[in-house]
Length: 132
Image (cartoon, rainbow, N blue to C red; front, side, top):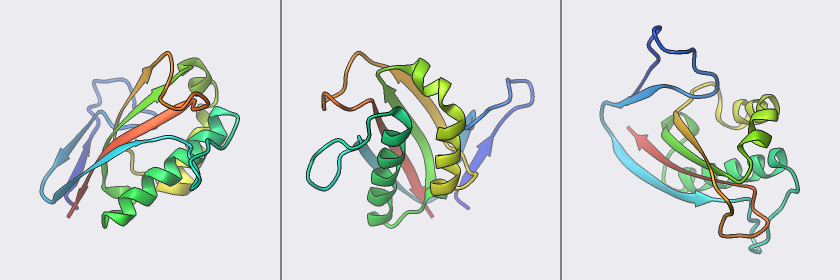
């Protein structure tokens, strides 16, 4: 594997992310921010959980088109208009992550924002993957 996930015991235990990811070799894929847009350009899902599932599906579709798989994700940045809502639904969001991406977690950052490009978007995720 070209990625090594690092979680020092001296840091708080990571839940749903890794503290550091070391790229050992491979091709880097930069994934544009994805929202819950469907194929017609319409945001689908009214809740953060519904939108998270579509966002991850879109992100993984782009990654797969570039030749990658979920375990190749090294870093994600999550932009969210209500981080409290994200945190309140972390259990459901985590279940969706595990169903779509497995149990390998990249390094992640969640950033609260006032709005996203699409007015109805609650969340956007961009990423970096490393394909061996």
